[in-house]
Length: 594
Image 1 (cartoon, rainbow, N blue to C red):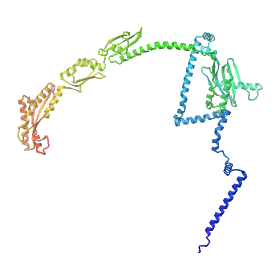
Image 2: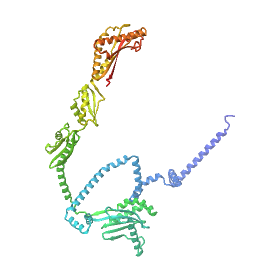
Image 3: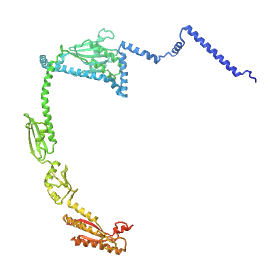
Image 4: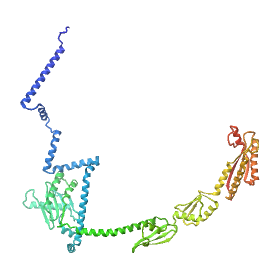
């Protein structure tokens, strides 16, 4: 095939590219023609077509119109704010649950001024109330009102209320218009209340009677009823009505309050009122609107003058300040003195009182307790103003019992005495036998001691006996091999051994105990058993003879030979044999049999 032959694939691709190019040129020409005919930019025309194909409102459009719509609606009425109340409340609740610090930080700049304003208002109301109370209690008009109260049988407070009251809404009824049933009822304090359901039924009956008996247009009804000082105002809504029982002469502005309340109730609970079947729980939400209708207004004075209140408070403040300062100071000092007395062991305050400008106190005092007069000086009380009488007694507190024990027994420095709360005298340490025997006789005569505990007490002689016993048993005398002769320098141990044995026997005799000295002879393993037996006995007898020559009673001593049966060290080396050729001692102490 030559280089100039025709390729079918290349030819087809070229034709396709030419076709696409022609189509693109046609579309561009149509777009240009459309823009010239309609005088609209292609991008705007595309958006217009997209809006026609999707006519729904987009969130972006709402975001642009929402602020202006809210402003325009808020200028018309207050329904938008009332409808958003529940939503805002839920949002605040969720925000507080997530992070209460956010709301706290936002309200912080407001809390301070609001608190100060509330305190200022409360103080002003208190001053006004106090001034009004003083005026009503001391003014000539108050005496007139008291006579009127006595004549009419009413209380003075009721007469004051009637004479100073402009008007007061005592009860509010929310009544279902179609059925005449009571939906909600509120009453102010200190007002006698009849059965609210019966009152609602009577008002509905009166409404129906008037509408049936007279030519009244549809939708009209009774607006007001008056019975002496009591007035009933009625404001109707489409499905419910409000009836307010008012005492006094209410202004017409009160009707606006009632109208606003019934409008808010219909806006909030229109569906519940329309579908009402006798259940009134849903209408608990109407209480805030009805409570706004329970208003009261008193006659205001021509000029608010707090002269009575300020003068009265000033006099009271000066009198209380002068009297209170000195009284409280003296009372605090006296209480401090009594507290110090009651905290002191060995002092019991039975009676304390004040009279004729002096303090009187009586009680009981242990001779070992602190002097009460020293406590008076510490509290800055004039001793001449205190008249005290103290009866002596013996306190059974452990610290005083311990002092009496020390005074009576005179223990040495090595003895510690302690008395517990049960009166048990614990003696610890060590002392001579003579002192402990004396203590065991005298403790019965010490008040407050119930038992003597001396298990942890050691007699000095007994300690000495144990010490000599230990010294004797530690003595070891070494002998030459195969003889009864002591090793060089071993004879120097005999005088100290003699002294220890003699003192041990003497102390044991003083304590009423039997002391027995056992002298034990030993040998090494060298030689036969028989030879070693005789040699060990001979060594023990030699030491026994020495003690006898020094005046030791040999009846309390015994010499025995044990040969090689109790070696001091295993005879592994030659030196071990030397230490086994010895005489050792054992002391046995036993109580004397009675």
